[in-house]
Image 1 (spheres, helix red, strand yellow):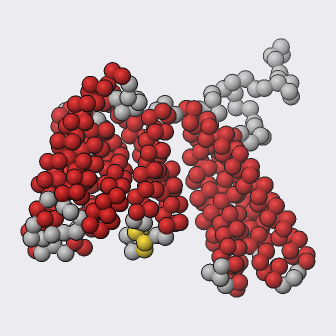
Image 2: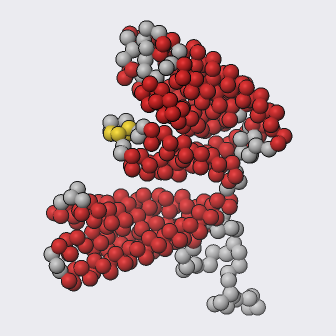
Image 3: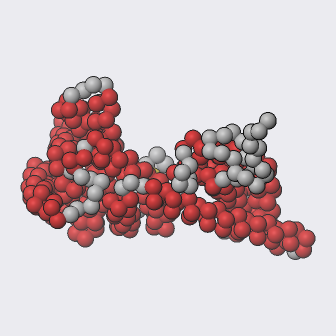
Length: 403
């Protein structure tokens, strides 16, 4: 009888299950990014293909609907990730998921409206070409709604990204590594645009730059984040999650010497493949000295981030979970990183034209397996910087010695 009943303007007590009609930040990010992605792909992208004659007007509606669905799925995936990691302070992951599920009630009708608007956005060239004033006016209004949606998605996404960055425990070292990865990829792609090997298609310079940005954000970003977190938790002695300080200068000097010596040794044992009877073309011969050095730097940095910082560390954690001892877990982790490294790089070995299976095996052992084991061991004992230094020294020295 005397229990207090909250008034309409009073907030519900923490932990209660009072119904909530508002849209919280995680849900707003998901809704806006899904709509923005769908309208960009199903509207603006279709217009671009129409005006560049890459799409027939007869297929406009089909392309708009298909690309809208694709863009909405991409936007939804990105929005969910950003909504979870960029949740407001004091909001748990479970609460963020609950807010996103609640926001789906608003997303379904919004998608129907967004699909109609994307169709009108895509119809702009046809409306202008046919001089249909009413259709042009409707299409212009759809463009305005799309621009406003994209602006809202960008602004609220930026707010969530700031919250996610502030919550990132290794943001100092992580930001340095992510930035360095972008620079390394851009430099190497300018020297030699990558080939999408599943499709045997070499990217243009412009597409390669976009690919570098996407690969940095959505591949190496998570790889670096997970790798730093696991190293901090399971191998704090490596100090990969902290920037170098003055008390590490002595250790850094010794690590640099070890890296240079190891890299030179690996280059010397591989030199016969490039200066002997086989006389394989080196990167310096194909790309020039400057291009070869940039490629060596990029390969050393990106490969060690993935195959050592990420793959070896994850493999060690999994090995430890099955009750392997410290030394045994380390051996299993280095072996797993080596196998993954071999699987990724062996696809390019047959194209070298080596005579016979024996030379193929010897090349794979000297140029891939032995270096991978060495880099894994150096990472495990001395840290990421030593592994990168040894990899860079091996690539650069081999390129210069093979001239």
